[in-house]
Length: 154
Image 1 (cartoon, rainbow, N blue to C red):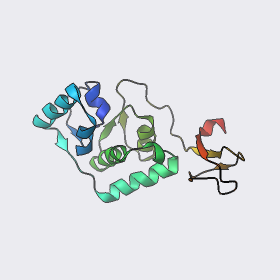
Image 2 (cartoon, one colour):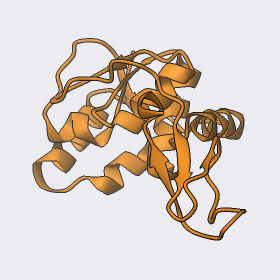
Image 3 (cartoon, rainbow, N blue to C red):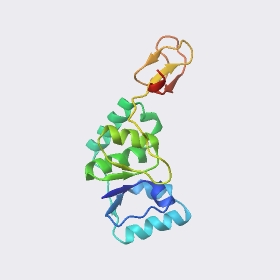
Image 4 (cartoon, rainbow, N blue to C red):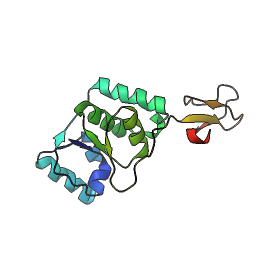
């Protein structure tokens, strides 16, 4: 089974396997991509609502990787749906791919190359330069903003 992100409908992703998605994806679509969603739903695509426990597991995984701030509610719920259904997540979103990898959820990409490695992001203070494993609103030392830093550049 494949769980489809909005990009699957926008880029006309095709598969003969069973498909699923979540209701929030429909809200992101316009024009032809919305019609594709409706047609696939009408021809048997499963609409899944992930359980709160799975959603919380995705949130924790996203916080661990440093991707939480990059993910929308829809993104989190899509990864949770793929996790619950033991399905392949179809998305071009790098943050979603990274979290899916952390949770051992298979990913299929559409129009872009997929990620080459799973990353645990670090955060660096723009003022004093200190680095942190977790994102915070402000640096606890000097109060400046933090930015996400690629761990391979550490």
